[in-house]
Image (cartoon, rainbow, N blue to C red):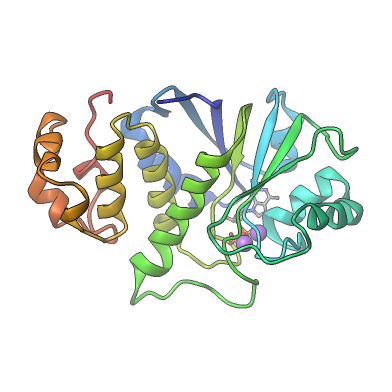
Amino acid sequence: MESTKFARIVLCDTSKSVCDGWRSMLRPCSYRCGAISVSVYNGTLGTLLKRDCGTVAVVSPGNSFGFLGGGFDAALCRELGGEQFERWFRSQLGDRYHPVGSATVVAVSDSGFDRRGVRYVVHVPTMVAPCRSVYDRSKPVATGYSRAFDCMWNALLWCPEVDTLVVPGLATGYGGVPAEVACKSMVFALRVFAVRDRELQNILIMRFLGEWYRGFFGERWARECERYGIDVKALERFDASRDSIDEILPWVSM
Ligand code: ADP
Ligand code: NA
Ligand code: NA
C-alpha cells in the first residue's frame, strides 16, 4: 500500500447474495488487502452506523444527477437528514451531471448533516438514471465487470482519510448487475489496489478490463510478472467473465 487512507473497509449490503459473493471472493486473501482490513456486513446501513466505526466515509452508488430517492442512497439520505439533506447534497454536486464512474467527495463535516461519524459521502454514479438495468449478458465485461470495477476503483482512489470506508454492492440494485459479477470486480479492485508495484498494477487492471496494449509496458512486463509468480500465459488469455482472479493475482506481498 502506498498510503493507508483508511484502516478498514466494511462491505455492507442487505442482499445475502451480494454478501455471499464478497465472502467467497475474499476468503483466500483472509479479509486483508495490503494494510486494509476488510469485513462484510449483511444488514442495513442504518444498523451498521449504530456501531462505533470511528470517522466514516460512505460510498453512494448514485445516479448522475445526485438524487437520493432509491436503494442504498435513500437509506443514506434518511440517516443524514432526509429531503433537506438531499437538496444540500445536490447543491454540493453543483446541481449538475456527473458521469458514471466519476467520484465526487462531499464533505459532510460541519454541514449540520454529520451524524453517526459520517464525515464524507463519496458519490459514485453507477448509472445515469435508474430507468433500466445497465447489464447486457452478451457483453458482461463491458457492461458489468468494467462498470463495477471502475466505480470501486474510483471510490478507493478518491476516498479521503477516515477510519472506516463503507461500500455497498455497486450497480447490484437498480443497476441490475449480477451479484457475482459486481463482487468479483469489487474484490479485484480491492486486491489490485494493494499491489505496490505500479506498473504491475496497471498491467493487471488492463487485462481485467479485457484490454491488452503491449506498447504501454515495453519489455519489462514479462519479467515483472515472473518476479511475482504470475503466469504470463494465464494473464494473456484472462477473461474476467470466465477466469478466477486468483489466476492472475499473486499471493506474495507486493
Ligand atoms: P445501484 O444503482 O448501484 O444498483 P442501489 O442503491 O439500487 O444502487 O443498490 C446498491 C446495493 O445497495 C444493492 O446491492 C442493495 O441490495 C443495497 N442496499 C439497498 N438498500 C440498502 C440498505 N438500506 N442497507 C444496505 N444495503 C442496501
Ligand atoms: Na446507482
Ligand atoms: Na443507488
